[in-house]
Image 1: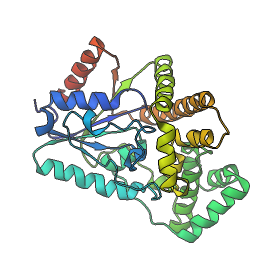
Image 2 (image 1 turned 90 degrees about the vertical axis):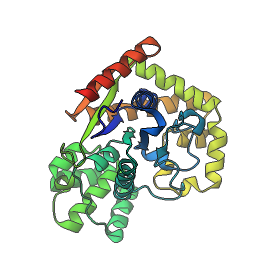
Image 3 (image 1 turned 120 degrees about the vertical axis):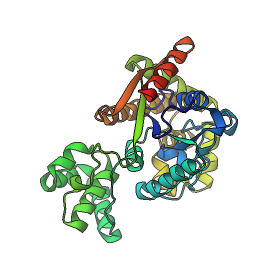
Length: 311
């Protein structure tokens, strides 16, 4: 089956909805390892060693399907959307050159948009960024967000005041370019034609999945994984250190949280992440939302996905 061969297929949406499983089901339905390859679009799965806490598929779980943009960064390296855009687009071209269909999979909304949409990244200024970061550390993010609201109301309306990195980046771009940051924010215009699929899981059901996953992570070795990552420099990684799960695991290792408290803290942070992801992807009218299910219903979901690709 070669449905959608001329386009990229993107499986996007909230964490814990079953994106990885749907992507593999689709890959098999569309021809398997000889016809389909997967490109990761989860910012935290770029990191080597961050496996349990990011729900990264192990090699033996990938059903023989080639996966790209996994385990490409050390935890001390900063993930760059601009660099990811270059690398991921190169992966798509390489997959095409092999006569195969690329399937982009992940819930990091800006990373998905960076690959698929017309999106350019303004330059940076380390001195300007350092000054803004120092102000955020001294006074918190809200004064910076207030400044952003006065200089670029559209950008401020779209950026969470608690997201230090994005607030700082927006003010950096305004200072460096003299243009509103909102002018560089992505529009819903494809640079690479795609079909985007997302799984629509009822909130109560999704919250239950998130709670179960949080418990499984602790039971499955998250603390031991975090110890290894700390030895590799996790605390010094500007991006990796912010990943949900690892901060809570560090608190357990330091005696600040019990394991039970960490499970609840991870579940709570993951629910918050899922709400932000849902808000991001719901704004995109191009996303096709599919009913999610397990068992027999999972087959129905796959059938709906294939029908969407054929449309």
